[in-house]
Length: 118
Image (cartoon, rainbow, N blue to C red; front, side, top):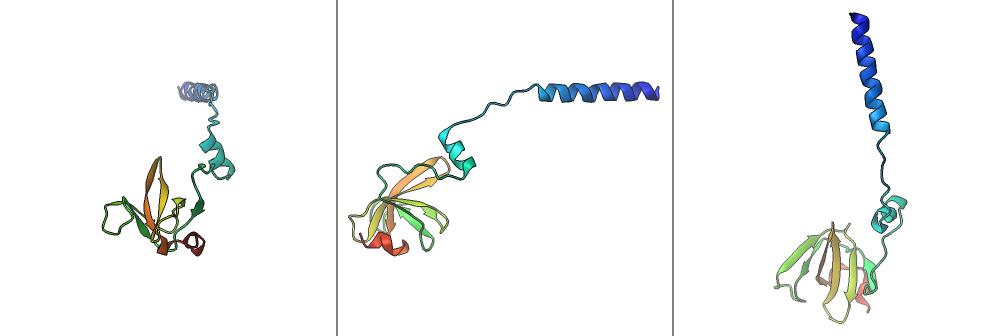
């Protein structure tokens, strides 16, 4: 009886291993996945003037005004795509959050000097 249970258990393990090894895994070759896995950065959109990180945490607003509606908050680890620098106090910027893009205005004072000189 003990040998029969052992044989049934062993046959069950063989069946499980065989079924797992017969599955095919499809390779995802999408650009974002390849860039992420190889350590390469994702391509920068053509409308971006500068890619930077803020010096301190901040907010992105709907208008170039501190009294306007806040779209999102960000910290110093967030990458900011600067897309317009014509305003004196704010830059128009894009934040990429997970799978969404947030476009609004960020204060120049919290960005590195290279952004402020334009």
